[in-house]
Length: 99
Image 1 (tube, one colour):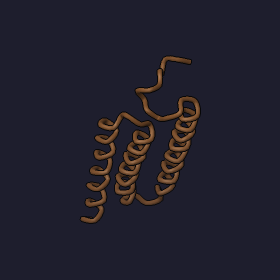
Image 2: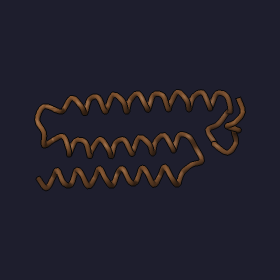
Image 3: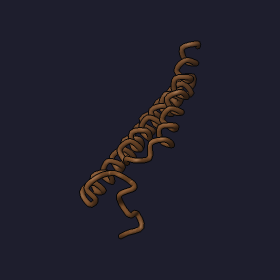
């Protein structure tokens, strides 16, 4: 029981580290995507803690991981498009209102 609580605390710490990194590092799109993935890893650890007590609900973890992979692939494709069109991933060097 204590090890499950430690996993929950580790998940919370990882989530809040990713959230603080997301708020503090807004220069590059890649660093923002990495901090979002860190937040997803923390929430996955918390879900493992919450679902470990119930029986037969492990398939929800696979659905969650599938959504995280889809989100990361979309983020990487947007990153590649921005780098191809603007030459870098700085937010301040591109005009976001331009089409």
